[in-house]
Image (tube, rainbow, N blue to C red; front, side, top):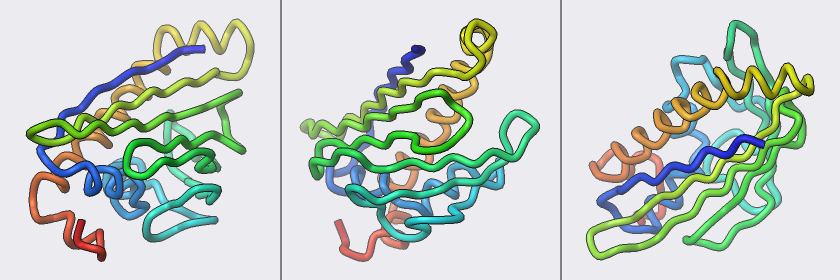
Length: 160
């Protein structure tokens, strides 16, 4: 199973970064190039433990539907979302947050398995891992941009 590991430094408090990472609206903004939208489950606000969201987007020349569920959460240190329905054979995304003196380290561990056996493994190795990594990096840059500016105030009502 391919594993993508990313660490992003964000000059903002851990609670703000944690909540922005759970924001449905911010996720949509980060994936606007792919016309990603939340179509079922938690479709606005912050997703919480045991809740699901179903995403619909255009990826790799096809409209894709992916349902994920938050299967673990320890605020503000971590949460995990796992695929319930979608094109992957398996998908698990762990989000970890570590407060440091000048901000927060946001750590993504993304495990997935492509369908189609050996052909899927080959495709994952030469293309899919890089594609998913770029999507995660794009999402993380939007979280960073919002957390480090005043833009976060438009998304988080509690004023973290």
